[in-house]
Image (cartoon, rainbow, N blue to C red; front, side, top):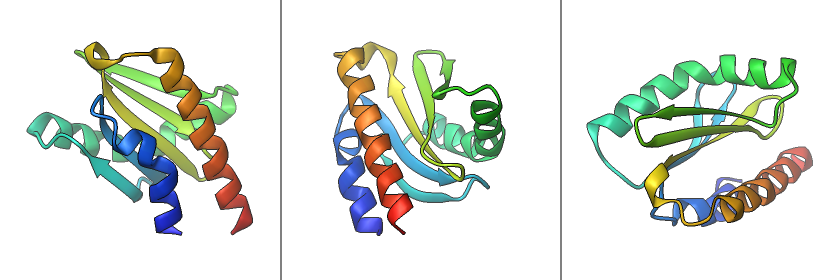
Length: 121
């Protein structure tokens, strides 16, 4: 299953604008993580994310949102609910975005494919 997840997330994992591509369980445990930038700032962000997953998913479901986003300096953290227990996290540098529309469309497709994969298991 990890190989399938890796293949589904490859459009983001290989994008140089995406610094972190991660799939977390609701309790903050990472299932998949690809870090394209190794820095203290990114590592601190990852530790912070693990504590935010459960609260963010709760907020997404109670407010019926598609995603939750945070901006820290020029770094944008976007969390998408994949299922009731999984969240996709993408960390991107705002100035490196080439097309937000393409990014959003890719995110929708990836979320749909991950959701189908989870439902089948």
